[in-house]
Image (tube, rainbow, N blue to C red; front, side, top):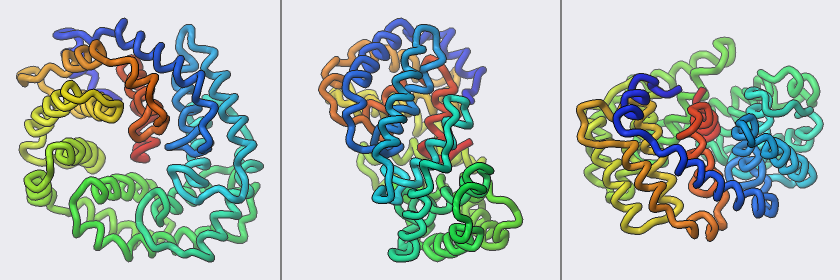
Length: 370
């Protein structure tokens, strides 16, 4: 959750224009309700299930009850398109579908029978592992995604008891962990946007594994992450990055430090500097991706204490200016509905300014952070 003290101090000093934020949300919802159901992609990150989850986060708000119905409609339509041909990935496929059911149940948005829908998904994942093998470490199509799926299956009584348990058992989970361990040296050899994301996903997943499931390799990977000397890698990466890459890098470093419980000297000042750079870039060349990045930096910075009372930066003033000068075509002209950089993410960001729990859900979707 937010650092409430910092959020309260900043809000009192400057004040977010909540009326303007709600106007943007209204415009955004009109666009999503009209066109969201026409997305061909079923997936959690790039498709209808992601929009359904975003709508569910708003459904309990006063005057927003109709959105829960719309979210259910998206869910039911997606059901019809889920079959054994779905990809195994997190962004567009089977692992993301399993995560979606876990999240709507966890946050009390809806109660549905996951097992019936996921029988074919479960079979497809097994076939994928058997025939294609695991050659990557990432969440979307690699060993981390399959570890996440297996963890969800083992922790979900309905899912675990209803599906065929002759495969995708603990032994399959052990095989995936072995595969991840084989790739992890290459991951730690680099320090960029992609590998920092991998670090975040790996740490958030592996620290949640039960101690009786392959404890030694899991503990070894977690220890490698906890013992890593971040400062020098961080400095070299920032020095070698363009401004745009630097914004993403510093943002992800902040997320990673909050996850792993570490600090990097100078990161707070860099974060403030690059927040201003992100705002400047957005105003010079307004775009949906730029607005999403700016709002995400601000909200994450508020949550992780990156803006103190003595800093020169006023994050809520930046938010107000970005929202005030937001051009409608950024929303109405977009065909990107994803939770990474599209209108789905913008809905989460706007709602996070109004309701902190929305950002908590977003972090769990994107970073597996609980």
